[in-house]
Structures are given as C-alpha cells and as structure tokens.
Image 1 (cartoon, rainbow, N blue to C red):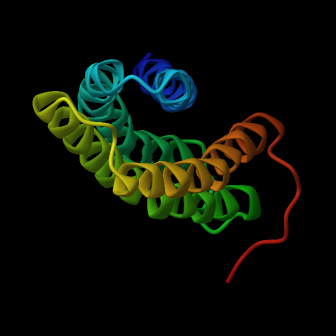
Image 2: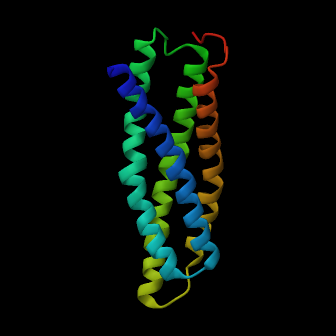
Image 3: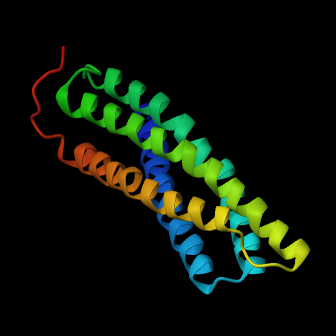
Length: 159
C-alpha cells in the first residue's frame, strides 16, 4: 500500500511539472504577445507564485519519491533509464532555475512600466527572448523523462 501511495505522489508530481511548465509557458507567451504591461505584470505575478507553490514542491518531491520507488523495486539509480532520467532532471533544473529568476525580473520590469505609465523596457524584451529559449530544453527534457519512466528502455548500465 505504501508503494502505491508513493508511486501516486510521484506520478502526480510528474504531471504537475509537465502541466505547470506548459501552463506557465502558455500564459506568459500570450501575455507577452498582447504587449500590455499591466497584463504581463499580473500574469507574471501569478506565474512566479505558481512556480514557487507547485513546481518547486514537485521538484523537491520527485527525487525523493523516485529514489524510494527505484530502491523499493530493486532498481539501481545507475540503471540506464533511471540514470538518464536523473541526468535529464538535472538539465531541466539547470534551465528552470534561471527561468524562474527571469520571470521575477520580467514581472518587476512590467510592474515598473505600469507604475510609470511607460512601455516595457528593452531589458524586458531581452529577458523574454532568453526565457523563451531556455524553456525549450527544459520542457523537452521533461517530455523525455516521461517517456523513460513509461517505456523503461534497455539503456546500458552506467558505471
């Protein structure tokens, strides 16, 4: 029973990572394309909050539940598909952490533009371009992790 509970938490955490990633990207992109600093400020506030509440919680739980599940099932963390998942998880984190920082900066720049009734500064647009570019490898890595967890392909054991 404990195994199924931990597995359920792990699966929900994975769904949260994928879902919040896709949702955040969609809402930020739509707000950006509309170009209204007030809308961007509001969306960015919500996106940053969602990343801290949902994404960060899942980021913490995934390695804990994943490690427990692997060991409980007799897998080694060096088994190919698990090691590949861990490596991709680290890649995702390497892109996600700067993205969160960029979101906070974009939020602050949009709030500043609203407060001064000015256009979004060039720094906002530069941050958005980097945010957009960083999102692709992070999201792709999460999709591959999903595939690895489902397919458990025979990847050589990593020593």
